[in-house]
Every structure is written in structure tokens, then in C-alpha cells.
Image (cartoon, rainbow, N blue to C red):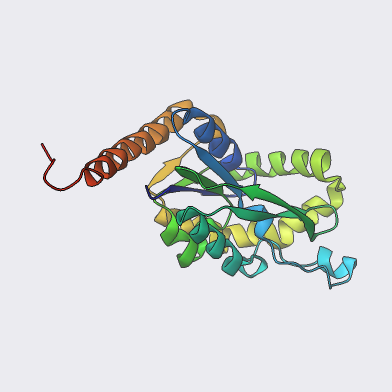
Length: 221
């Protein structure tokens, strides 16, 4: 059975990763592979550290779309992938990778997931997680200080010079491609239940169709 790819996009700090995890956990009757788009930043390890800090990481050009599309295509073909890992402290791609096996459902989240037509067209269900700008900024500050060890001044400078302008230019306009828009961030229980129900109906339909296809000719009822 062809895997279902569930794409979850939204601005930084919107709660898209929380939605992605909650959706994946709720699909207890299906095998699920989870991919974070952050792992697919281009490798700028050849660039000096101070220059890497000034790269516009919120622009679509910062992502290795070719690798992302190739690995999603491999998962669709039932093949495992070695997902790259991004090191936020050094602003480089880590030498470490994570083996992701093929599954019935592939959940992928990323701020710019719907900004590229190739990745967007691979998603069977497209979800956009929405949240107020103030809420997103507060969440980003807390996350970057706690998990990425970045000083407040650097966080605010990056947000004002690249993150917010790129959100307005690329992320927010990509909302129009979404099948479902989830307001109020990642803890909207009703919206998550609706998304899970939609996925489960689609899985049931695909399983029934594949089951009929497996019946030898002449034995159909």
C-alpha cells in the first residue's frame, strides 16, 4: 500500500511539531514514520562560523530540497532512508543520521514545507498550524535559550532580520495550499482529532482497495 504523507507546516513556534507528534501518537493502528524538515538544511560546514550565523536560514534556499524530495520518494517506494540531522549550535549538518523505515503514514513538519511545489505535491494531506505572532516569538525565545543555548540578543536579531520577514514572504502565503488550518497552535485537541479521523478513513479506504486487488481473478464475490 502506498504510504500516506501528512505534511504539517506553520510559522516558527506555531506548534506544528506538537501537532505532528500528537497526530503520530494518535495513529495507534498504523505504522508511522516521523520526519522533521529541520534536518534538511543545506550543509554550510565549509563556511566560517561567523558567516554561518548570518545565513538566512528562514529562506527556502537554505533547504536541500533535492535530498528531501528524494528521501520522501524513497519512503513512498517502501525503502528506508538515513535522515540527516542538523546541529543548531554549530549551524552545520551533523555527521550523524537517523534511520527511518518505511511506514503506512509518514508525518513531516517544517516551516516552509508548502513553499516548494515538489515537496508540496508529495503530501496527501496538508495541514497549516496557525498561531499569533506574539505567541510564536515567545515560544521561539524560550526554545532557543533552553535547547539551543543562544543569547536573547542573537535570537531577537535573527527574528527581526530574517525569521519574521521570511514568514510574511513565504510561510504565511503557503497557507493557501493547506487542506486543514489548525488555529491556536499545537494543543487544539478537536482539530487534531479531525485530522486523525481523516487519515484513518483514508487508510481504511486504501486497505480495502488493496485487499480487493489481492483477490485472484475469478474469485471475486
